Length: 362
Image (cartoon, rainbow, N blue to C red; front, side):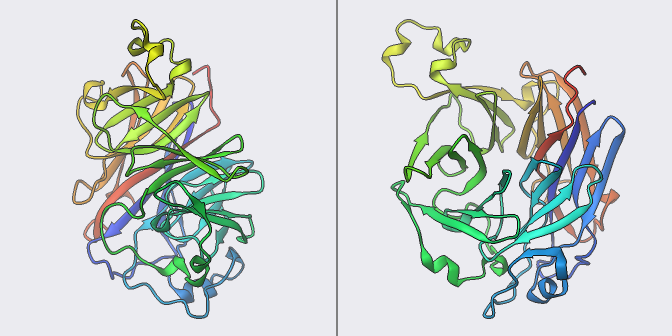
């Protein structure tokens, strides 16, 4: 495989109160033509950890009235974003800036508005995260300062909630399974001046125009039930994962000329937004339905996905590369026995994919 692929992953323990060595936890997997390698990083969790981390933390220390976790949340990295010389990776309560060249940690960007991070997006001077449980988009700088934050209501109203600043969300643990917030935003990205968010609960994009202060839905013409998770835009097309083992490829109807669903008489008379095609992984050369499907990124004709790793399943997950035809280009597997104590772990799941140093000729 010619591409250099970073894969973030998370893991949790059978005993939610189990105290692990947070100075040495695996969270990043690099896969390329030379093989695979796993990297470990410190994970400050409780209040004392942040005070003891010293200059590693870029941002605010815990609020004076911050409370310790009731239960320790999952560990590891979530969303990933490449920008400049760095890979940025989200954790429960911070964004890690990691050198692309050697995967060494540079700093942890953290503030009181970072909690249970899912997808992240990083620009030249901006870090976008989502306070998922409150449907809030948070804009921070590389020193951890909060530039702005706003919420999106069920009626698509954009509003600011000053009470969010009263809580140090970094130490609030999720003690239930399933979606949080009205929308449960999973993936965030900037396209031009707009912020695009995938909504797990609505199964579509929510698009925010911060300048106009307006939000709208971008609806997807699904032809099968989906459990939409991540969605990345590549050259005007969108590649989504559905957690039940599907790849959804969508594009606006006005540019979907090659889609056979649009080649019918008088299709222009109908309301159309985004038109999609479905690649069921069970029908590809993979030959089975994975028990989970989450991260996605593209490089040339290759589409990279993370699969498997659901709760109470085999303690491993995979990275596959396939083409739209379903041809399986490659697959790799990370078993937890390679990096941790299997007797303690409940799950290990691939979260996001970021492809670096692409060789288009390969």
